[in-house]
Image (tube, rainbow, N blue to C red; front, side, top):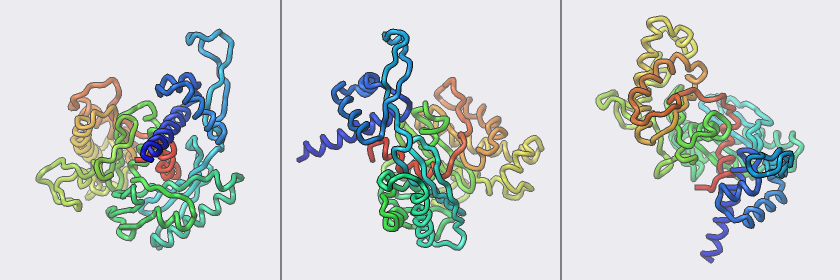
Length: 381
């Protein structure tokens, strides 16, 4: 029985590995065998199963003469099939919730917004389930093509149990079993991911980090959070609560933090803390006056705070790059101009890459769906 289980797990893992390679662009069976080190027979069998399931489709492309194929011939490649499967994405923030449908390519087909003011977690789950049923009815696809619900929410979360734990400034949602609630109301499986982990996955699958195996995404807005990819996999730590860069200490004798530590980065770098006592109402206003002395002083401090944490992150994880997300990513250049030389001068590793850059544009519904998209293409942890 053990051998049968192990064989089944291995087969599922191989299937996901092949799907993930096909996801990245059309690829031939020969290339799949070369990159996975699986036998041609195994590749053929799995590819035939994926074709029969309607997940992939053949496409033709010009052969590369340098690869030993006669010029002018065309060879059959495998690509993900458009409109093959769909996922719901639910992106929960402190003020609103976005609900929609994405396909295997990350394209957003539907997108609705629900304001959370006056809503409890229970009434929110009721409303989200209603939106999901309505969106499913709007789209001309059978129900069996909708595979599940991905949820992103402020952390910390228990991604294995699907529970929002105790995010700051989100007290009404503490210890909310959001996956069980939506599964019960919709009949669809649901998976939860911390919002910054989901953003890191989105950047890896559809953004500027597609060809980077090790990076950190740092989100700066009302708080400071992060997600880390190491060797193309999401890094969680022992209990799934790792990579909380906002709660690393940049001053050992600094003010107490709600987490129990002292001098945590979040106390200094979150937008409300940066702007406290200034004439600037938000990040956009601050960066719009970046050349004025009082704004420049705040931006200089922000760069120093963030550089202290990022140099530690580069040296601990041997990162290739850091991406900035959240409110700062809407107008990142005044911060990047100050931050980049500080980080470049202090990290141990030297790279031709610019060490820090801004994220590409995010799509909240797709961010929410990343939990189920990641699970579809990667073996579940």
